[in-house]
Image 1: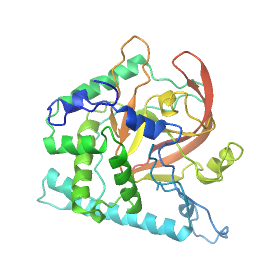
Image 2: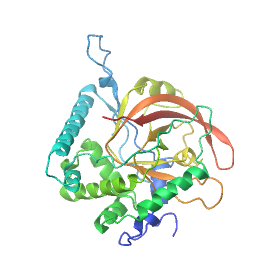
Image 3: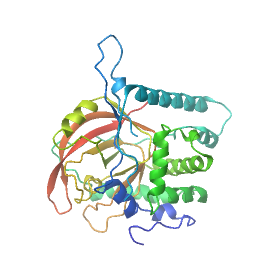
Length: 63
Length: 276
């Protein structure tokens, strides 16, 4: 079995035989790919420290 | 090569709305868990976010900053033992078929589902019936596999920064947006590797400054190959489930070891599991 072949899912030993296909590796790790990064808030302006927790407002968020 | 959606910046209103949605989904999942009279399977089928399938796992720490990142043959043998145990599980054929459709030879289905999950903040009930069924089956496969995890995984995945971030401002972008303790949510399935070298594109990646996430997590399933020699084998894939919460613990410059014994440096954003 080559790197890009996926075993037959009807085979009960599917998960024992499965390895990440080359196409998924290329998609995730290749030069033009990459796992989508976290989305990040770009605050319009900095909040004054009025007791509001602005840490939450700057949490990243994966798209 | 399809790449899926491009990274983007959110305004604070959108971000807060997505955080609120996630919080609501977690509350609903807790209500499902607290309901009596339901089997484990029914509860899992009614959750919006997949349940953590791991049991007791050994805690592991980030390597020292100066320690070259490489996967050892010893560690890979342990992972292969876990994989063998997963392979012996009786998994329904419909679950195997769903997994093969999403993580098959063509990544387009993975990209499609990941983009839908991102658009819907991980809410599987917002997807059409066929897609939701497929997602739940993939969740079940990953949950079944991660039940065999014996120790925390240390895995890597590249970050594709938004437009405007380059080698000159990368470090400040990471430090500004991902300070220690910052929560990061992965609504999608995430493809990672136990080998930093593999996750970095095995030395062929175009952007030499592209940062990596270095993640310590008990979650997910090893899908690599057994080593064919005594040395480490940079085919060490690992799929993380959707709907995981992580916490930033640092931005570092670390050495990555290539199979030929040389090392080179990469910037990493270190993340670890964030429990409820």
